[in-house]
Each structure stands twice: as structure tokens, then as C-alpha cells.
Length: 60
Image 1 (spheres, helix red, strand yellow):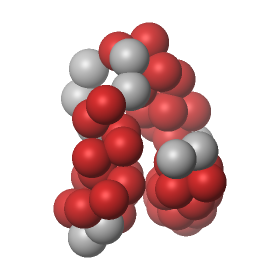
Image 2 (cartoon, rainbow, N blue to C red; image 1 turned 180 degrees about the vertical axis):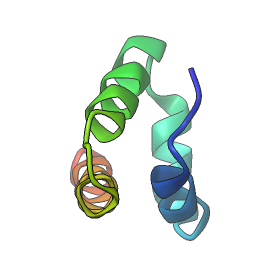
Image 3 (cartoon, one colour; image 1 turned 180 degrees about the horizontal axis):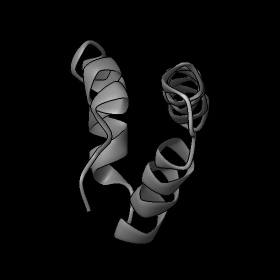
């Protein structure tokens, strides 16, 4: 499954979040990716990507 560019950009700037995301089971990674990708507008996808980073960092 391909990571949306909006999420990839945010992940690449936060190595801790990237590590946490990479450690997730494939099904959980898919949930994040689908949730972000389902946003119709770019602003929505960017907002969801930022929220996903917060959620990843809060889950450690």
C-alpha cells in the first residue's frame, strides 16, 4: 500500500514517528493510510497526516 505524499512528507520530517509507524502491524498501517487517503481535499489529507503523527507519538 502506498503512503500518501502528505503523510510521507510529515513522516520524513519526524524520525520518531516514522519508526513508530514502521513498527505497526500491516493492518494498522493500512488503517492510517486509508484514513488519510480518504480525504477529498488536500487540506483534509494534510490535517489528517498531522493528526496521525500526534496519535503515533501519543501511543508510545
